[in-house]
Image (cartoon, rainbow, N blue to C red):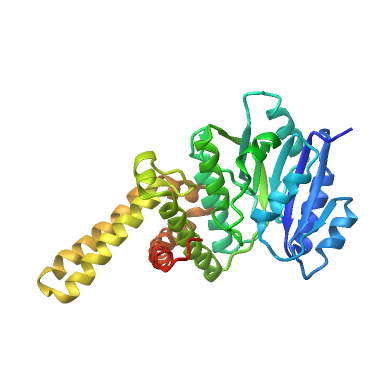
Length: 334
């Protein structure tokens, strides 16, 4: 009998966390499922780990990235429901059953879940990133234009109709946002299921987190330019980045231009300094709900650290946007 659900996992050098991912899946209760692992030319023992957990293993001939890997998994899947997770995701014993139950509703064609508050790394950067992702999804509406592949599922028939993920993305990037927007344009609706929680076992150093945000913002602006700025302006924010943060990016650019102008025209420098002060207050105002939410979970010192990180991160994101625009003009569309 064919499985109800095909769990699709691209992996590249998954290590011990990947084994934990598979062990958690194999501890799942009820629903019939299969696990399909797409090995993207791992240099470690990921293939052997997959074999130990009786997965369907497909070894890709060369490193192609998660988009192509997921598409390949979907093509061979036997389940009517495709459940995508990453190799560093730990599901709960009832996760697959929850996915099965949700899709009993014939009106549901695609879903995405959220990250849990569970975070095993105690450093600021790892905790902040996990909280950022969780909060961003918790405050979204019940239907979204995203397909968050850390925990997302879709009916196989619909997925194949869309053509799958854009294979021009050769590394983890904004391919899930791109797919979600394309799915919406085709009339598909992604339902956000907040009770579908998984743990993301991902360590971030400060430098690593800033680097991630830099290149993600570059990829995001390239995606926006490819689809046309008019679509963004007319249809609004269709990304996982909160509108309040985008407003902060705009304010940062205004203040930066003002300060640079003040260097060449000292007569307006005082105005520029005042604007910088207003900017700082505005950043707190725009993020006050998020910061209060962080204070409850991490304490006031964590809130203070988070506020200054947001200001720092804005400068990195603006730099990434500038880099992305320049790279796009040079002909690099992805």
